[in-house]
Length: 390
Ligand SMILES: Nc1ncnc2c1ncn2[C@@H]1O[C@H](COP(=O)(O)OP(=O)(O)OP(=O)(O)O)[C@@H](O)[C@H]1O
Ligand SMILES: [Mg+2]
Image 1 (tube, rainbow, N blue to C red):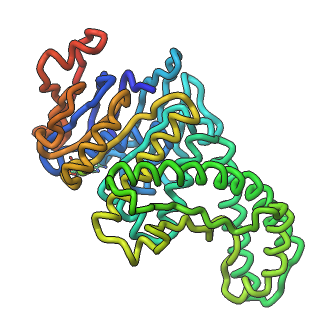
Image 2 (tube, rainbow, N blue to C red):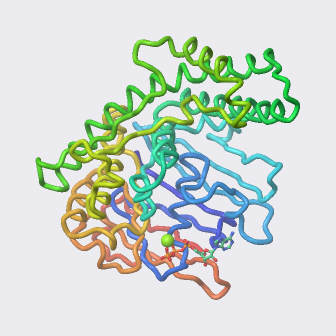
């Protein structure tokens, strides 16, 4: 999978950017605050319709502007697809996604068109943070493989919010409206019947791949890493029926605590090293290796499931990795279009198939991107000179 063109307009500190990236490694270097992560974020918007670092779309629209646009031209299996995401600072107005020239009716239509895996320093939270961090990782991963999964997640989330609102209302009114509960629980059960089998299938393979990646990075067979999906239901249960029964029986208890205690929003992916809880047992270095292994496993999983390599986004991770992990990561970069940000160009020594861009803040504080690599890297593309704009 290749991004042939990237365009940003009124997005963060980019007034207007048009880039024809290298099919190998695109190294973006520049000072703190220059706009490197913003560029990565723009690509992430085109892949998932959302940022990898904020849930507030309005934050990314340039101050004083009515909208921001992120666009890519993606080449995949000989076909080129155009994706455009238009964001507004107005909460009430939804973001608009265009695929080709056609407006997508649902965000789920975007899923999988541009698959990306992002590494950032915050990834350590995957290991150190709460179960929500790991669920979010799993959800973004599976959504990019299955639009049906993403659609079901949305349905589940909406119905869960409605059920929770009803729980709070019942607590105030001390009256349980059984019929309304049933309607929401049916919606949740229906969605769960899609979500759980996908999580089981994909996370089980992710676990195998992550264990292998961990062994490769650590170089130690004595360290066995596992990422174990803890499903809310037993293997042999009929998902929709069993879940609906659980919610029905728990209504009284749930009203008391004003939240839904059972469901896939409470599930966990347990990370262990030699059978012991990573979070309390592992060293900092081991936790870093675990986070990196999960991301590399994600990359391998996409290739396995789709036959295409996703686009890799490495935000500020090089300086955090020791030589061994860096070498392992660089090995993975072969045949993957990669966007790497760093403050020092030398952070990516040893990586050949690349093009270097300098990102700097211009006079008006807007980002300017300039290609600085020598001819040899540029010559590997189709010969076009990169049009780089303000
Ligand atoms: N909505 C916005 N409108 C205009 N500028 C913005 C907006 N949001 C963020 N910025 C600017 O973008 C810059 C930060 O960009 P970014 O996070 O990409 O930096 P960076 O190059 O990744 O830096 P670092 O090396 O510290 O990670 C800041 O100068 C900030 O003021
Ligand atoms: Mg940054």
